[in-house]
Structure formats: C-alpha cells, structure tokens
Image: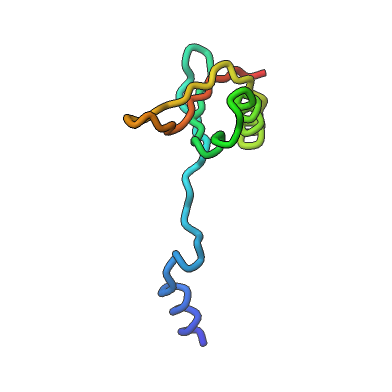
Length: 94
C-alpha cells in the first residue's frame, strides 16, 4: 500500500492537477520621482472602459497589497503590432 501511495505521489504528472505556478498579474517596479510604479497585466483591464480604469487599478492595488494608492497616470505599453502588452500605473500613497 505504501509503495502505491509513493508511486502515485512521485509519478503522477503535475498537469493532471493543474497546480502550475502562475506569475503575478500585478508587479511592483522601482519608484520613479516619488511615485510608486506597478506593472498591470492587460487582461485585468481589457473589459473596463477607459474612464474607469484608474479606479479599477486603485481597487486592485488595495486588494493585492492592502494599501490605498491614488493613480496619477496609467500608461498603456504597446508591442510592435500596436497590441497592448500591459499597463504602467504611476501612483501615490493616499
């Protein structure tokens, strides 16, 4: 019985359990001129209208890091084909 359990643990591929590690959708970058800088993955804001993106980013940052940030500027980053690869969010602590 012990051999069967050990064989199951060590021989079962990870893909079966879908427990692959995921990169964070939000990353903290180095501060820039007193502003905090965050990288936001594009899928977090793709369905949000442009006028509501700042408030959505503020809510995401509060949920992720537990601190209130006020978005000063939200800059989309484009690739060579003009597709949005992500957003740089420049914030200040409230």
